[in-house]
Every structure is written in C-alpha cells, then in structure tokens.
Amino acid sequence: MFIFATIMLLLSILWFSLVMIREPRTLWSGASFLFLLLQSAIWLMAVLFMNSERIMANRLMMLLLTLALLVVMVLIAVFPVAFIGVFFWEGIKNIRREGLRPANALSLLFAAGLVIYTLVWPLFMTQIRDVWVFALSVILSLAVMWLLGIFAVFCFSALLNLVHVKKNRGLDQVVVLGSGLMGDQLTPLLKSRVDRGIQVMDRNPGSLLILSGGQGSGEELPEGQAMAAYALEQGVDPERIRVEDKSLNTEQNLLYSSQLFAGPATAVV
Image (cartoon, rainbow, N blue to C red; front, side):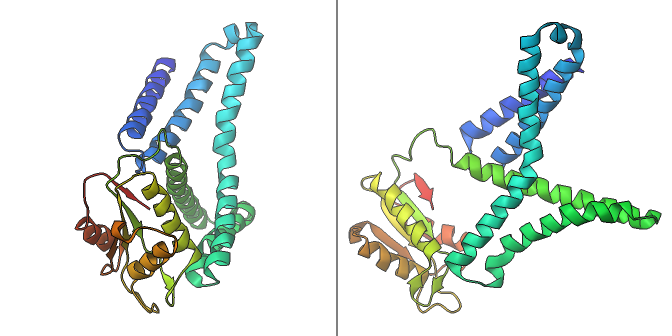
C-alpha cells in the first residue's frame, strides 16, 4: 500500500509540474493540483499507518507528519466553506459593479443554494424511509459532489493562473475581450480589463493593443470602438491601437483578432 501510494504521489507531482511548466492557463492546472492534494493526504495516511510504531517512538517525526496531514485535510475540508464565501463575495461585487440583473445574480444564487443544501439536506436525509427516494437522494448528492469538484478545478485553476514566475515580456500584441456596454459607456468590469491591457502593453514596448468586441443588444456602438475611445482617453498612442468590432462571441473575438496580429506572442485579457 505504501509503495503504491508513493508511486501515485510522485506521478501526481510530475503531472502537476509538467502542466505548470508547459501550459498553466488550462483547467488541467486545477485538476492536477486537486489530484495532488488528494494523493498527498493518502500518502501521509499510509506513512502514519505503515510506520506507526517507529513514528510513535519519535515525537518530532510524529508531530511533523501529523501537522502535514492536518494541513492537507484542512485544505480539503475548508474548501467548501471558502468556495461558498467566494461565490457570495463575487456575486455581491458583480451586482454592485454591473447592476441587479438575473445574469449578475447567478453567483449569489448558487452560493445561497449551496448553503441551503449544506444545512437542510442532511436533515432531509435522516427522515427518508423509502428505498427509492433514498437512492435518488444519494444520486443527487453524488451529482452535487461532482459539481463541486468541477468548480474546485475552476477555482484552483484561476488561483494558480495568478502565480507568475516572471512578468509577460516580449509580447507582440495584447488582446482585450469585450464584456458588454451600458449604452455607449464601458462597464466597470470592462474598464478594468482595458486598464489591465494597457498595463501589460506598457511593459512590452512596440506591442499592439487589440480591442475586440462587436455591437450587442442594447449597445449603441461596437464594444471595440468604445474600448478604443476609452484607451485614447488614458493616453494610449493611437498607432498602437487596433480595433476588432465584428465579433459576437468569444470564438469570433479570437478568430477576428488573430487577423490583426503582428507576431506570435500574445496575451489575452
């Protein structure tokens, strides 16, 4: 058991390392990190089980291994609470920045649903007497756990994407994707995207700022043109701005923007 747990741990470390080195911006970074956490917990439990007598005789080793196991277990156990908190926070922040609309309230509603499920569902499970109802409830519980696992991968991927060993350098262009307008004005979210794009562009002399977004429902002009006007207000050189104003979704954003590329090195905001 110990040998198998060790092999699995080494494989999980190798997998996570390869993902972070080759392409950390994918969901595989979150999946490999979650797998690494689980394998670390299994390996530590195997170490404690297989070497219990030797560890018990060495108090320092016992303390270190117990603390390591507790850290891993706490990370796994606390995640649902932190997960719900993040969705509550992001939901409230999104409503404050973008206004109270059904789409902007999804994060808040999802967090509220998880709280209700966590507090009410266990009580409901204890009252079930019918076998078929119990089976359906188990299937629903597994579905919720699967959904939480998927969201865990997304969250870990987003957090790991914030870790940069070095700043983006040597870029040929920086692509900023649109996210909706209020009439002809940029939303706070879209302003923050353009500001971030300008920051990355400033670190890469000679790079282009490609502002991508067409005209959607309720918008008075294409998002790309509105973003370009805002970038000019921030003092960006007009010669370094390119506008893509035909796209209607993310796939078209990338497809049409690629036709304006000046080179292969690209950052997308």
